[in-house]
Amino acid sequence: MVSRFSRSMRNLACAAALLGASLMPAAAQEGPKLYVFSSGALTGFPKAALQMGGVGNIDWAPVSFYVIKHPKGNVIFDTGNNDKTITDPEGWWGPLAKGFGLKMTKDDAMAVQLAKIGMKTDDIKYVVAGHMHLDHGGNVSQFPKSTLVVQNDEMKAAWWPDIGYSIYYIPGDFADTKKMDVMRLSGDIDLFGDGTFRIFRAPGHTPGTQFAVVKLPKTGSVILTSDVVYLKESLDKNLIPPIPGTWSPSASYESYARMRHVRDTENAQIFYGHDPEIFKTTKKAPEFYD
Ligand SMILES: [Zn+2]
Image 1 (cartoon, rainbow, N blue to C red):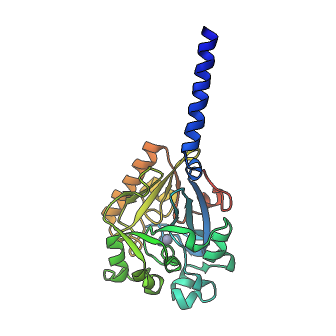
Image 2 (cartoon, rainbow, N blue to C red):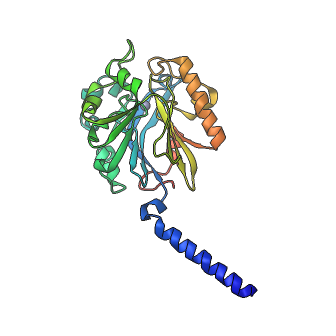
Image 3 (cartoon, rainbow, N blue to C red):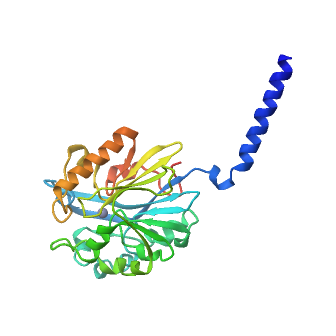
């Protein structure tokens, strides 16, 4: 009796497993993957531009962006420097190109970077802009079929900046966003409703800066900072950038605290906006985090 009972239970479990597998669509069985990309670098510029009281120069700092392959649609977080800076850095960035030692090569072009994982711009469903500064919103116009996900007041700040804060916004970068679908946020959102890609409003650097938290099955939580914070040292020591890299000091400190809270409660890794050391140790596309 015992053996027949256990055999039938085993058969039942087997049938349930098969049924479960057949009910699950193939795509849903594959969890999200996070890819790290390069959009060139900033070289030989004063550390004080990124951190108040910073001493000396930063020799090299990455300009990064990220793609999340998700069963319900792919996401790009930030879009790097406009591809036009590959051939005409000063024409597009003006004096900032020399000031920040902008270096962008043909290999850093959006299409070339996405091709590393077999994607094209049209394969991206959501373009999430950490903010609209020139090294993050540079290529948003290359995604006319995607939905731009951005804080409402960030778009207002980009189009009509406060006095003294226009320098890092280039209207040509985002002129075509008027033709795009735009999801205007005034707060946080769980983009897919499954906790895998959450956006946190975190103003301070700009009026509508936001960071993302990607939850991966093996890696756990990863925070993508955009420029809510530039460097690991800045978050650890509570150091903010000077004007115009800080729009509101008090909001910046609150956003630092918010990010630390997520970091500590979820034991999250942080991929920083421009931290040279952290970027060097991250896997780059086509390698990925899952
Ligand atoms: Zn930046």
